[in-house]
Structures are given as C-alpha cells and as structure tokens.
Amino acid sequence: SNACAASGYALSLAADLIRSGEADVVVAGGSEAYSRVGLACFNRLGAIDPERCRPFAADRRGTVFGEGAAVLVLESAEHARRRGVKTVYARLAGTGWSCDAHHATAPEPGGAQIERAMREALREAGALPDPGTAGAATGPGAVPGGAEAGRLGFVVPHGTGTELNDVVEVRTLAAVLGAAAPLTPLYSLKALLGHTGGAAGAFAALAAALVLHHGTLPPNVPVGALDPECEAPLPTAPTPVTAPYGLVNAYAFGGNNVSLVLQGAAA
Image (cartoon, rainbow, N blue to C red; front, side, top):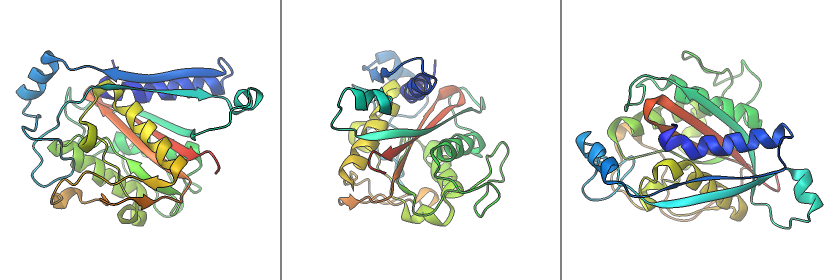
C-alpha cells in the first residue's frame, strides 16, 4: 500500500497508461473515510493535534483527519480534441517517485529521496534547466539540475502538521528551489480539509489544476506564527499566479514519496 501517497501514485500511473498508448482516458483519484483504528494509531504516535491541523506553525502538535474523495479525468490531448472538449483545466506534465524505506512512520530526516521525487517530476515537466547549471543537487540519489526561476508558480505541499514532516519538506523545497524558494508560495490544503489520507494527493492535484485554470492561489487558512525551521510563504490573501507550473507533493508511511507537476492548459 502507498497509504497517504496512494492517489498521487494513481494519477502518475494513469498518465503512464495514456502516454504508452494503453488508454485514451483514465479516471483516477482516491477516497478516505474516518477510521477509529487509524485515529487510535495516530494518537499512539502522538501525531494528532487536539485543536486543528496547523502545518508549518510554531505550535503545531500533529495532524487532524479529514474525509472525502477526489477524482480527476486524465485524457490524451488527441482524444480530447477528437471529442471536442472545451475546457481543459491543466496538463499533468511530470511525475516523480521514490522510496527511502527509512522508517515505518517517520520521514528520512535528510530528505534525499523526497528531493529526488521533486526533481524528477520537475525535470520531466521541463521545469528544470540543463544538468550541471546553478542549483544542482548534491545529496545522495539527487537528480542534477535546479528549479528554473519563474517557472514554478506555487507548491501544494504534503504538510501534515507533524513536527518532522513539515521541517523536512520545507528544507527540501529550499534545496530544490534555491533562491526562488522564498518567492514561491505554498497552498496548505490540509489546514483547510485536514489530512485526507489516501485521497490527499488527488485533492492536492485537483487544487493545483484549479489554481492554474483560474490563475489565482486561494488564501491559506491562517495557522499563526511559523516555525523558524520551516518558514515558507503562506499567503492569507488571494495571490495571482502567472507561472506555468505547480508542484504537488504526497508522502506516506514506509517512505513512499510522489511528486506531480501540473502545467496550465494554455501554457
């Protein structure tokens, strides 16, 4: 099981089926329902915030469960043209997978495999310059090339509100984006919906597609003062997005990591 990264993997697999010619249209996503067993396990780990989900906040105490389902229709451009599709929200331009197998429940503190997934997705999308240019990765298993300034408009992070996860993700985003990191806003969906588990990646991809379609990043739910170790731009007012790409991250127990890069349909 890919757990909380499952629907992100499903979208990536759907894209592979279309690119290989095995399918013209694939419906992919995920759903999650409340589970007493799941809640008990997270409580035992000390990973449930008694108030609300506050990713990246200085006083965050864990995540909060959410419920729901998100499903996207992926289709080849040729097939969409043939049937006269009038509205295309976005293009799934790149995907990256990795597994660090560091711990059953905790992320690998160095973030090497999280970084690899991000870089592979950005590279496949064409949002990375040629290998060997400024911003090149140096960590174990890293893919050369740094994020191209001005190409990535926003990030929908995994951001669960747990202590280590948030720090590792922001630190890794800084490594991938370099000087562009402080200028690249995050949209913290879990602060709004809670952690929707296996559906989280699909919800994040859906949000990214809508951001690209409308050209506006919605306001983040305020979480209070940010942790100095994971300060990142979390705008609480609507923010125009003109860059062509958005990055989505989804991570899971067992070290399963998936990143998706969506591109505006008009780009």
